[in-house]
Amino acid sequence: MLLSGYQKTIFRPECNPAFTSVHCVARLNEDVRDALPYLNAVLGGDQYFSDPPEVMFHHHGRIIKVGAREIAVNALNDEQEADRILEWMKNEINGAWENRDAITPCYSGKTKPKLMEILKLLPKTNCRKCGQPTCTAFAAQVMAGGRGAEGCPELDGDAKKRLSHYLAGFSFD
Image 1 (cartoon, rainbow, N blue to C red):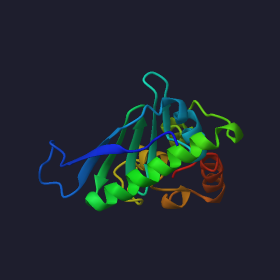
Image 2: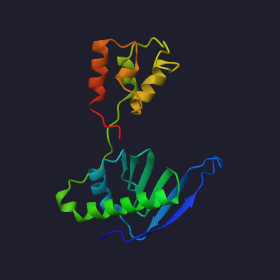
Image 3: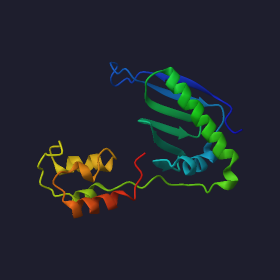
Image 4: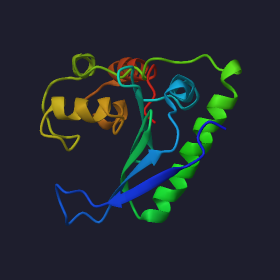
């Protein structure tokens, strides 16, 4: 076992005290930096940083950052949710470390679709039929994984296929 435990702090965001969600930062008892490339390979991190070593995940609408000595999680409902996510991450870190001989470490994040590539495949009419003020705003939603080709009423069958084909190469977890 690499990670034996942590000390957590729960707090409300300072930028808007009216938020009902809470954030959590857990200070890890051990340095887990050597496990991060294996954890990234197992869970498919959105972003991976080498210096300092950190991996970021999106999990059920939460952003989770795992660093050498810290786990941070945003937008939690309550402390019980923080406990569940922290225990899950602890188990994932330990599992990745224990199975590292069978895992190819990954030192990069997921590739993301490019805004301009999506925009090139849209009609650029700014018709607002999708509910957005511009095709660029719609393309930003597509890039983030919130919308797909079917969300643009102006796309014909071939254009929808081209956009769907482009987006098929990406993961939007």
